[in-house]
Amino acid sequence: MKKLSIFVLVLGLVIGSQSVCFSKELKIGYVNVFKVFNEYAKTKEYDEKLEKNKKEAEKKLEAKKETIEKLQNKLSLLKEKERSSEEEKMKKEITEYRETERKALIDIKKERDEKMKEIIEDINKVVEDYAKKNKFDLVVNESSVLYGDKTMDITSDIMKLANKQYKSK
Image (cartoon, rainbow, N blue to C red):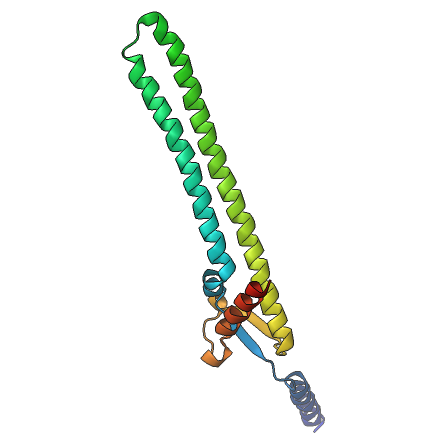
């Protein structure tokens, strides 16, 4: 009898504590951050700017490459004494070409990384503000969701809000 009353008491406590734990219904949503990132107006603008910078760098490199090719063609026509002087010029041009190419790649990568970080911060801020305003308890990235009802997908709301906020700036 004593064991039965202890069992009933423990069972009552477990059931009672579960109802307290689950008394608040959680509001959960998920966002396809990759999709928001790609459709974000700021991302598109920065992509265009980076492409323009890349083309400018390629144009400079092409000019240097042409100079090197001219020097190579000139070398074959020169006498031995003149050739060594021109070879030095060509080596210098090749070194400058490689340095310009390396610097351009590093600069473009650095700028791209900075812009990506800035865009991700913007998106995270929009998600946070949206979640607070709409009283979400949890918002996760869609890539970490194995299953989620489509009604929990707030991606389109986040995209619209992010683009609206960016255009108003």
